[in-house]
Length: 133
Image (cartoon, rainbow, N blue to C red; front, side, top):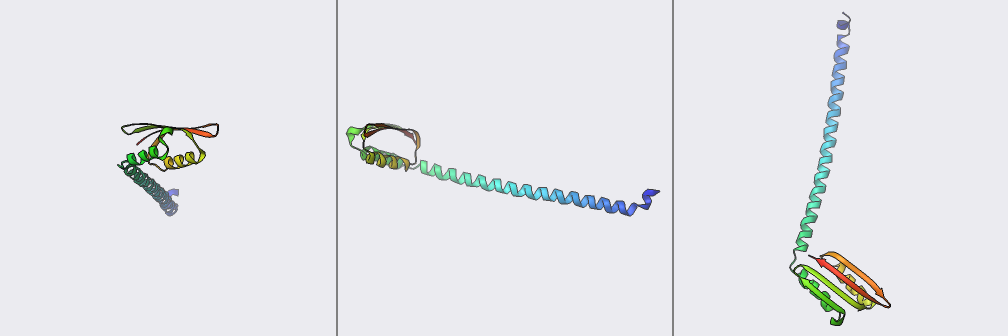
């Protein structure tokens, strides 16, 4: 009969317990939703970046821009091999200013650089460059 005596307190305790459980459940759901929204926003940004890079790499003018690298230096300093969408170029006997001009042009191209080897021989430089697009 003790249970009947404290029936109101037990109902209040059960209601309080139910309210706390509902509060923590709702709090977990809200934080989970915010986390999912953040992940979705990050995925959308990554997708936009991929689309932009694909658009840049699909540019038909990249081949023409690469051909300018051949004309940048005198023909005696350049060994050029272009097959499909792959380029292998070897530059020998470059001065410091020519090397600076060449590396600036290379770094501004939208290509995947596979090899960029710069060697100093005396006061001149030798450059080996391989890329694909």
